Image 1 (cartoon, one colour):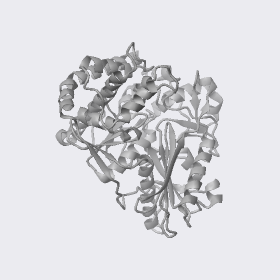
Image 2 (cartoon, one colour):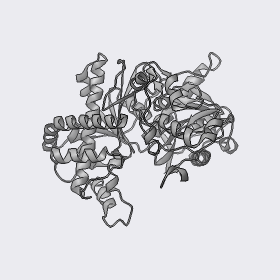
Image 3 (cartoon, one colour):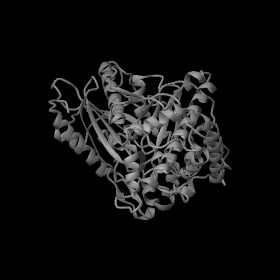
Image 4 (cartoon, helix red, strand yellow):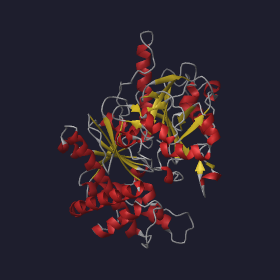
Length: 519
């Protein structure tokens, strides 16, 4: 990694992911000085069911401090870090006491223990409305469902809670000793009206929400580092700003939109999320997309289409030593320079989608081989095309040009974006070129850029205005190499023929699942 001249200021971005945590240190030009990713620290959660896991937030903070201190030393910096911001998973969180000490561990968003509690009695008139204005479907993954589970099973911790802090916000809140919730994370609870930008009191009451801290937008100055080993090590001092970050996928998208403002961002992590922002739209639901708030807190709405991409490939990711050799099927296929096989037929692809949408992600009686892996990938890519088209229709509903949105360039980011075979397949399904930015830790970079811009804004405001609640603006661009992936013409034509039938099937399948969930 590059060394850092003593006069250069350093900015730190942290990505708290489902699988890994990542830390990046950049300078004012967005040059990467140091970066590192390690496995997300987890603990067993014995009362959550077989193989249940959770996150103990205090060891997480210690892990992040270790990484930041290591990186700061490696850069050879003479000055403390100027600003730190954290982004990450959307729904996980913990009750804390008045001193911000955790009272429980954080249940991960993908844990299904709250499945049976993700429906509500709508005799409260406003509940039906908030299920629309919340912008997201209430399901097992939402914070609201976890609150209901915790009220039943961990009453003592919830009863003592002074605040609820999200897992992603917790390190920043702890270092600044200031409770807050990022607005893009409030929007993942299913209790926040993303159209009116406020909490729904009836929904909070119905879900047993604990006390909630103030809502902050990405780029807001939360405070300065005032506790922890970052101070004693010299990596931070009393002037190191702590900046609000927020939900990981939108933060990664914000980095891409610095490079290409009209891009639709196709984020391929544990979940696949298609992201764009629109000027306005009336409250509504759509089977393929949810609505949230723009990451910077600016007016308008964010459109998010979500598909459990990694889970849909779970049957092809067995543990090492599995007699089926399934793990090797996935690794072998995605490491190729060209996607193997040819387009499947619509019946086989929709059967693969059906399996992907099931709660246990079982594969009926189909084989775990390369042909069925390609079908699973095709189903996921076609579903992403449905999400992209739903975003274009949202633009049209808000009075913008659907045609321009439909033709917007697609930028693919995330860990899966490293696979040339997958991006070639994705381009063929989308029927257009797709682009990938050469940056291994784009999400961490995105939040580091938010920290940088907020620090520059704060420096300009010193002595003239309060540093709190000051939105950041992009003061500098950044440069990264971009790669283009072209569709295979014959595959593109095949997927164009398949797509209308696939979309109709997917829409009907989602309606069936929604009816089942509400029954």
